[in-house]
View 1 (cartoon, rainbow, N blue to C red):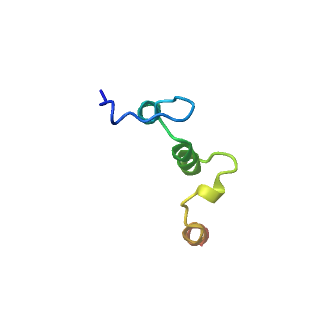
View 2 (view 1 turned 180 degrees about the horizontal axis):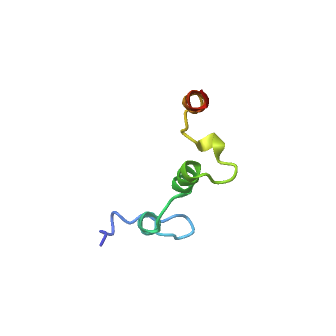
View 3 (view 1 turned 90 degrees about the vertical axis):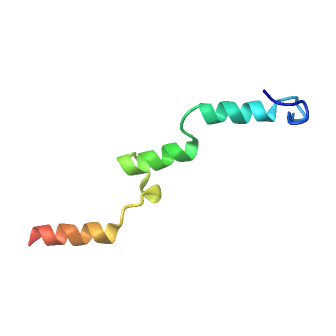
Length: 65
């Protein structure tokens, strides 16, 4: 899979390329999960939300009239 020249190891002997490959195959990253929770309403995720609060306020006000 990798040439011996491409393989990089940490000082503890961990194959860096193998770890990167396994991480890529593992699924959602920490930041992916934060973004997903922000979009779906997880507890305490408001700081990650991309909701335009002013737009929501205007829509609520418009619907109340």
